[in-house]
Length: 259
Ligand SMILES: [Zn+2]
Image (cartoon, rainbow, N blue to C red):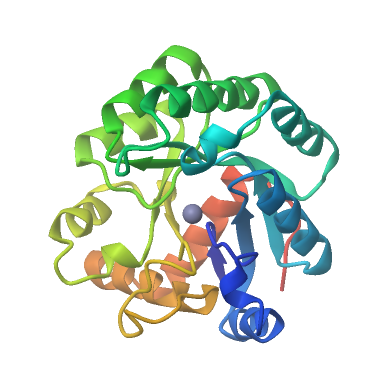
């Protein structure tokens, strides 16, 4: 059994074959999926899928790339879902992305800070997107995130930063990028971290791992992330699957057991 803790199964890339794609995931042993929103609309779509599929849980949030479109009413809507929807298990995905020039760092930071404060206030885990913004992401968490817990999704920082995050209460999510042969730094981090803080994810439809690199990604391929961790740590694949699944249930506080 597998838990893909970050998959955009609400994406338009699956408009033609979403049910078949999700069935392939279930057939491959993916019994839990966490679908994050990137704005109000995609958060609503994630919630709708969580109603439709027992395997799917949702997160709601404004992604840094969509930060310029954040409104007070939109943030209030997220808050309402977090308080009323049973299968909304986190705020996400939120954070900072300095890869592109827009939106400005200031706008991204304002929207991120609002959502970090919301996570602390509502005692909800946060699912963080941090791309080329490690320093500012950590500064904001240190300043506004007292007692916060959550996931650094598609981790791309250093080993030292991961160790600090684990002390703060975070889990570290690895995607198909870690499986790429050239990702020697990430592979070393996977070998060093405590197994009880590691999560596996696809971030589909992006970041497809080998042997399907270059094609559309989907949750059934999360098995290749698990397989690479088993290889790197010389563990049984079944143990990697079981432990990462339990880690996901723990951080997102999912009490329901699925067979
Ligand atoms: Zn994502």
